Amino acid sequence: MVTAHSTSRIGLLTGHSLAALMRERTVALLACLFLILVIVSAYLGWSATSTVNAIYLRSAEHISAQGQTIPPNPVLDTSPLALLRNMATYVSLIGALAAIVIGHQLMAAERKAGTMPLLGSRPMRPADLGIAKSLALIVAIAALVIFAALINTATFLALPEFRLDAVGWLKLTAFYGTSGLYLLVFGFLGLWFGASAKSETVGLLIPVTIWLTLTFVLPQITSNINPVAALNPVSALAEPPASAFFQVTGWALGSFSLAEAYRIISAQLLDFLPANYIDRAVIPAAASLFAAVLGVGGLAARAIACMDMTKGDYDA
Amino acid sequence: MSTFVVQTSHLTKRYGDHSAVNDLSLNVEQGEVFGFLGHNGAGKTTTIHMLTTLLQPTSGTALVCGKSITTESLEARRHIGYVPENVRLYDTMSARSNLRFFARLSGVEDPDRRIDETLEFLDCRELAPRLVGSFSKGLRQRIGLAQAILHRPDVLFLDEPTSALDPMGIKTLRDLIVRLNREFRTTIFMNTHLISEISQTCTSIGVLNQGELVFRDTIEKVTARYGSESSLEDLYLSVTPVQTQGAA
Image 1: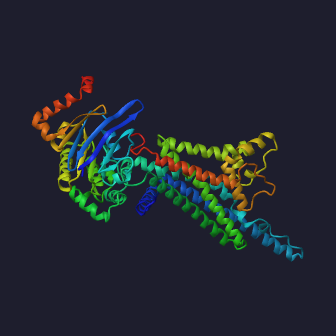
Image 2: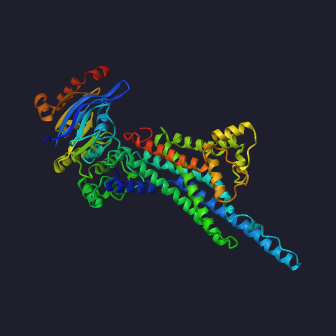
Image 3: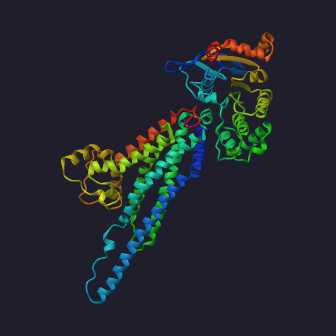
């Protein structure tokens, strides 16, 4: 049963964890890198679109002066949301890595401080620490996603050619929600191994290896997407060869290929999914993502609740 | 009503085939300063870990202030203060911030007033604004003691409190433990392997050898029966024969 005292302790632990997180330089560095890439992505989208639009307007003026029919503006041919397709790549690369480090540091900082025995002898339930760390992770990732969303919203407002309708804004919101869930999977991975690994290095290496496998190895096996193609938001959605091998691997492993699931959802929401694209995974992409968040989140909470509270440090 | 603050019955902790604590039945009365003596590896720290609810026993029962350490661990923790052997705090925070955090976690109302009172009692109010990372072991131990008594626990568990302290630090800490017991009527359960600590600080003694309680009495009776501190040392060595022979 969650009591008022328990709630206030969870709030206290969450705030304390976030304050400790903000003092970690590695976390600050990766978060800044992610946000800089979001700003660069927004600038490139704005700059490229403005340039093409300016060229079109000048050409249209020239063509009009010659009395010829003006062709349609190519900028308006594509969905304005597709401007943000690079965001999906940044989220699955630097964003996921930042999430791992955030999750890992939330536990590693506590373990390195050596205060677990002092926390464990306080009147709090075993689950309270896990809930507090998970909440701190959710707040930190939400902050990253909200900042990215604000930058991209500003980009849209700075491009008067693009007017998002209500559905467009809803899709954009859903994209950031999906991105937040995707980052949470990796944040929970960091939290899980930050709590259960015997050493700090192993606690970071295991989730990074899982991230590399999900981002680069699985897509190659299930859809023949090589690592370089995986960095490109459009080529990462290319149709795999129609061979029996990819039919089988796509069907059997596609549900576990989380990076692909995220790209498919992002492409659907940002209107750049190729019209003929068929997801061959047994479990739909959205269901895979939800299952991963719940599954890894549960494992992280269990790992924290089962921690050896007698140990003050990794080596103690 | 029982005045026992700590009651254990057949308390056992096994790691595979090895028994760290074996069939420990022990009572500690309210207001006692109990010294738990034993060689390194005798099972003293494991016992404290179980009594502070940090470790689940393999079998047996234990009550702290009448609350079971297994089925009422949350309630038991409200009565407990704990100072580990190597006190670790948040180095990048000031002593006051550390204490405020632990006070709020223990449910102390008006934490800042309580912190001031506690630091005043421990005669180290000037440490409050300083970063804990800059503290010597002695100062760290004192803030460690402060965090353990902020909520005025009924029983304070100290694990080798004077290890790694210089003679001055040892004396200061011993005086504080005695004052704490007298002024707040806090029961002290103290692990040690130092005979001098027992004779100068404790009111009762228990000797643990290879996980088993081999001796239990009050210091008053022990002193009356055996005399001086050196005789206490002889008593200790006589009740812990296995390791003594091994060491010889």
